[in-house]
Amino acid sequence: MAKEIILGFGIALTIAALIHFGIKTLYPAPEWQRYQIKDYFSEYQQADENQQRDLAQTRAELNRKFLKDKAAWSESYFYWAVPVALVTLLVAGMVRNAAVSAGLIGGALISLIGAYARYWSEITSGIKFLSLCLVLVVLLLLSYDKLVGLFDDGEDGAEENKRVRGRKGSG
Image (cartoon, rainbow, N blue to C red; front, top):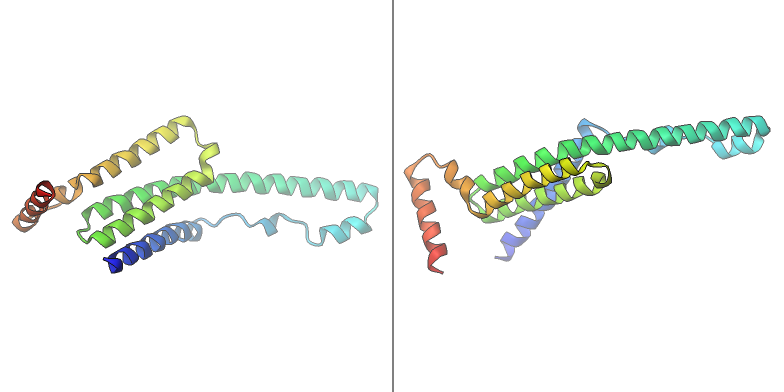
């Protein structure tokens, strides 16, 4: 039992990291350093009053651009992470191994939490509502083992489902 718990936990963390770094690889986040003036403070100290004002203005513009680009990236991250996490949840419903399935579910949920946390204040109420409804529907499907039954194509799978459901009902 301990092995399965540790395996599920490890899969959950790995799936969450894979989703996160997969998105960052395909769509890199803006890097703060690229929006900075090199040696700003030394240049500022050596500049006259007009040059200082220009440097400060340029720095403020770069910071605004960084914040705008970072917000756009966070939005894209959200729109990538939620569907990938939902697909991961659906795949988890088709996996018969409990530790692997739990790990996939955990990783998807960690990814969803990260996506929502990163972009929650910017998401419209409609997008929040619709995406959370989708997540809830998928989780409810998983809780009733509907996905495993939907994808069974043989008698063995149907018999296994009856046996498992019979055990659940007899406990």
